[in-house]
Image (cartoon, rainbow, N blue to C red; front, side):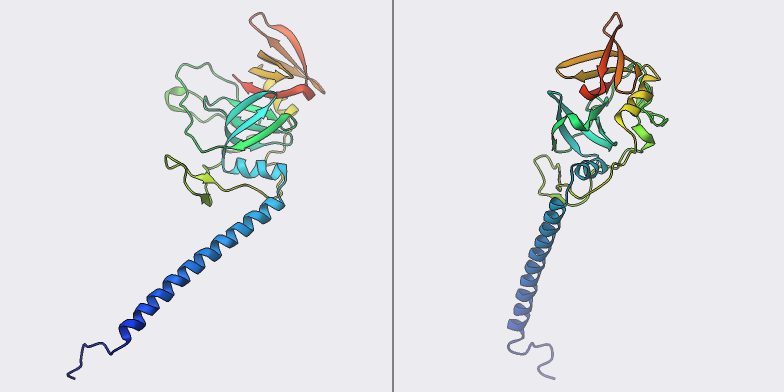
Length: 243
């Protein structure tokens, strides 16, 4: 009883060893997890397709910079159709980009979109018949083609944070199908039914005006202040921005 409360010789050393072993095991587990994550990322990269990468980015509403038709279009990638993308620019103006016209697409650090200014003229709804959700001041925000809801903000596993606390998204990958079963021509046809004010990029030419009609492979736009008719081959279209 006289030894009650006393620790037997050697126990302190044993407990210290236990602590060292536990720390070493944590380090080993963390290294194994990093190796597993790296392996999964490499597997996804090996099985990646162009459409799959686009769909993965759109599901995260990733901030991207798209080069198409000699222009750089920056904003959130919101959805992927059969042959087009929808990018919401910082001005909240959606831009439909032909997949065939894309030269490069680079994910960017997520940035907040600038609020729309009050008093902007009403813009027509996008294809799909979905109403634009209201913003403060009665200003409307564009809906997505095909009736698809806006994806949730980026999430998932992130790489080391960038300056300012912005997380860098993990590289997308995998083989996926377009989320919106709609072609670019069908989307433009819906916009033409409302005589939507647009800007178009065809080759090296940018046109602004009202989209009047779509044919089998051609668009008709009333361009400029005098509304002169201009016909644009769909195959030459790089992007269409809603005004």
